[in-house]
Image (cartoon, rainbow, N blue to C red):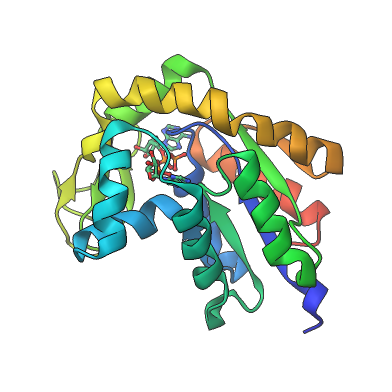
Length: 223
Ligand code: ADP
Ligand code: AMP
């Protein structure tokens, strides 16, 4: 495969807008891995690594983990074999410095292909985050009301236990939304100016969001 045939999709949207849910739905179909920085930090935390312990202080507070360690982590992740055709970036970049760093990393492959923007109202975000449950084992995402598991607190996919993330409690959610508007929202303009920003109405039911997303990706030769 020619280097610039790689496809890099950057999901932008506030916490709780459905980025992880959609990445999990489309990743197999597209044959692209989901690179979710939040998941990578949680994995490190679970395994008590130095990076995990450092990230924890910021995650608990709803703040961004410092750029240097975050960028290094993503660079390492994207260099792995499974990203040979590209990747779905979910939760990265989260500020302009990270966006510039990503451009540098992807320069040999033609840069970011498309940046879908998940648009949702703040009150929807709060409702979605407060009902979110995650599988401790495989990371599958559920919602107590909008996407409940078949058996209470048990993952449909792997039978693992579902839990609520510490940073999904109401006190932290406000900070995370504030951080999104202040630090992450500027990257919307960054990708808009390149002509690769694509609005997605993420208020719709999940299946409709998936359909809208796949339509947009097809325009960029991703199918
Ligand atoms: P993000 O990755 O953007 O933080 P998630 O994918 O984890 O968001 O979704 C947040 C919560 O909202 C989860 O509980 C998920 O089940 C639920 N959710 C995702 N998409 C939708 C949707 N289109 N309609 C209703 N609930 C949704
Ligand atoms: P998420 O799972 O995407 O909601 O991320 C959870 C938390 O991980 C965030 O609130 C941040 O503390 C941290 N995090 C995730 N992605 C990044 C990033 N790109 N830059 C800095 N911190 C991040």
